Length: 303
Image (cartoon, rainbow, N blue to C red; front, side, top):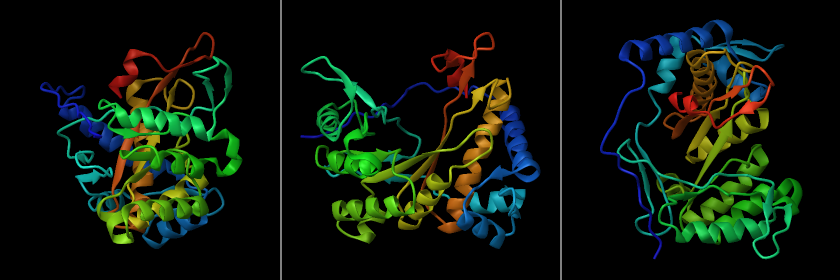
């Protein structure tokens, strides 16, 4: 029987004071209104302009008035469910629990049988999904590696391998673009049973990375709009590199990353009011002595 073990912490603490949260919120709104975010998507630019944002068609920079941001974000649901296909595998996102997943999208692996260091394949995605399905500490599956043997269509094969080897919720960070998103929706709809069931109990969610500083990926954002319209939850992850693609302070990185994520979430609400969305920020640091990308630093978790 497939089951999951949510983490329900007994203790909670706030890193930021209420005043600091207010400052970060104000700084985020200032950046969105005065500096703007790059959206290299004709559809996104049209949607923003239609709703009163200031759009520069040449630079593709969108500036969002605070009132527009707050109105759009008021439609985002505060709680929703990421569904699995077995009883007890629902991830209830209401702040009462945390859920662990696998990390994802690697391009190479160590062959378990031969010890060979090689490119990952669809078979690896399937095998790892099967293992994740068994482990109760893993609440949902993010394909650990990628189907390098299927080229540009690899993300759809990763989804196929995942759905056929785990009953847990599946999250993809590699399905981007309008066409690929529509194919993924057909697969998810077949799993859910119907378009309406897909909205009520989505077995699939999407994670899209922003581009620091203050940019969006065209294919990522256009695929996200397709998912949002179908009711499939979409998350946006900012990955500011402190000292290179973001200011050299934790607060500055948080504000810039927050602006990237919020701008994308606003777009989803303009396209499909009430669309389930989630916020993610994963900061790293540039070593000023060497230029190295440092991701294992303890202070990044303060963001």
